[in-house]
Image (cartoon, rainbow, N blue to C red):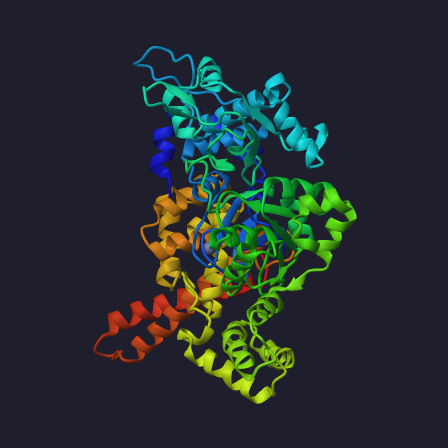
Length: 630
Ligand SMILES: [Zn+2]
């Protein structure tokens, strides 16, 4: 709910501009930047929710209504709300981002108590992104300068020509203390902005200096293509810093989530349902150029759970469709350790995990240089299931010619088999392990069972979080109440006065009644123009939490009609809705009349009888209306 935010911000960006941004924004495109969406029928789309962990998609998008809603966790809203939640932006920042995307120039309402402002107050994120964009241009230009020769040679030695350097925006941080800082200050960026962005840092004497010096730079982009940081490679022997230096953690740069190359790779990852995880910037470049467009790399940190979450959403990895993840770790000790850590993570990853180790332990960049593009594609094609790799390395260190060696190797390998998530595959791996060890199946099986039972929780699936937040559709009455509310939320202009005329008491379910009351509190359907604003108004007017969550569902759930709803459909739905309440009242009334003595309570008897007759007449009219006659 950001009603207060809208009110406060309306004094900054003009209301009509906010409305125009909503109108010109394709919500499906905005969400597709971070979540892979598939058709969910009736023009709607679905994907894996970015706001909670799930294995089957319950995150719904309705492009026709410009809203999204997650049935799993109850989050929902319009494109602005999506950016606020998914990218932790403020309301203004989200609107600015969408405006830039749609090519719209925002106008800001000036605060009439102060002097006219020369520059509108922009959101912080947009300022930091703008500073990075200017820095990319600066560094890129420096790559052509005389002092950048070692950087150009570094790229050339690794097989990257000028076009490749351009495509990845490579740059050079010159041998100077504050050239970039001065350049950006001249462009109007403040001291604080440059420090917050991680582009500059205060020196010991307190003056502001550049973070990167005498290094080859790769701009690091987020899923949407905005540059949010840099990776910097050491070039000179007298540079006593680490081989690679990255932007520190900033409001933009969160290394646990960042995957280098994802902006260029995401479409192919979604299309092919697979991703190749490599170790460095040059490996990503080498893979893409060699015809493996699905490659990404972590930046200055090990591959972890947050990376998995990002990739699963891009992969659309779910129970229905398992994505494939291929690691190209070095075959050396560090690489093996990383692979085994990935094996631990694999238990969270529904998809299949593979490892590809190059000949002579060459990484993709070295392989491309030595043997060409085809060898890189071949490396990825000849991937091995991670389980097989892990097992091989677990037993390789033992002397299998001795009984002790075989038993030790079995003890070492059994827990790995026990960890395999897909239980049906375990017997197969027990047989394989027994074969590799040269042992009988039974002792291996016992060792695996012992390891499995020793594990806490035994690999049982964690209970699903969230769960249904709204009333379940358990009766025809509940179903029709829901349908009437959907019409009011989705098609207010059509539902109009017909909807408002039906009294709240017709809704039996308390949550439905709460939403009906919220619609009335928001001014009634007759006052609504529809769209995301209307949905927000209803949600904000709803006092009931379950009701608020239900509004989001109602906004995206398809109507139970093929084709477009018309007045006849509204009429039929509302008649069905009232039918339940009218027949209920008739039943109550009849029971009451039976309990009354018509002789001693003659007046009351006739009053109730008259009420019954008019209700029965109403019921007949409703039955005709429900049958479709207007
Ligand atoms: Zn969710």
